[in-house]
Length: 381
Image (tube, rainbow, N blue to C red; front, side, top):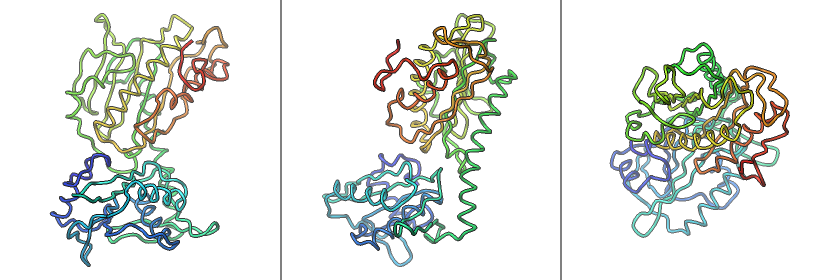
């Protein structure tokens, strides 16, 4: 079904028509509604149950404006004759007020059908589940979904959901630790210069919360996004783990940097030329500038590969003990494993989003925060 291979914003009438023509019945990931939820308290609670059940399961779509038979099979459009902007605001307001914690990545889009409209709500498989529907200020309930629809979770199921969310992050952190170990042991897909390393990982949470394989064949013709940290591409090719590019300035025996895109949509980039082992002062402006531009490129890779939001950004600096920033105190440890940040939208100010990463690096040399920001804007000094 095309609808599951597209971003919510790109869904068109023909995608919904395909579901109708294919007689795709309601299931764990799709629910049809002839009408929008009502204004009453019970309607709002039921709507909260619907939305949260998707987030607590595998994610999916609620499609308003499609009529079904008694078996849940779509039989045709029943377009909504409403003020679409007003209704989308109302739906989004109900999601915020009736569901806790907030579900990241929910997207509501209108689909034009002749002179009227359908409304589609995309709910991702949440990385911070379980999400509860608020009945009153003191009472909540938690729903999930199967192919037969939503159902309330019992105590053991709720506990298992919490454990699963924690396990997802443990697996992502384990991936990072393992890959850093490979870099330290020089077990990398590309041999790099013997200098301190800057490592960037960008990992979709969907890579570890569900089975996820991306179409790597899209990468060769989009090489503009595939430059490693520091820029440049000397060669690019498929490899065992997915797809790799690297850069070698001046045809040296060892290379400056590489980018590895994994089959699950995870990205790893390592640079061994920006920080020189014989110079104990960071070129911090260069580091920040290159990370900002690199993250921007890799967001485009995630969009190209249609990896689900959110994703985790992680920066690590290897073999940097003794380095300083602008005559600061020296770094006291070999490895700076900077805490991860969560990116929940493609439409972000990169420099603002990754400022906590920069602040942490400056903290390691005795500074309170990155000195390259003014009123929240990145303005290198």
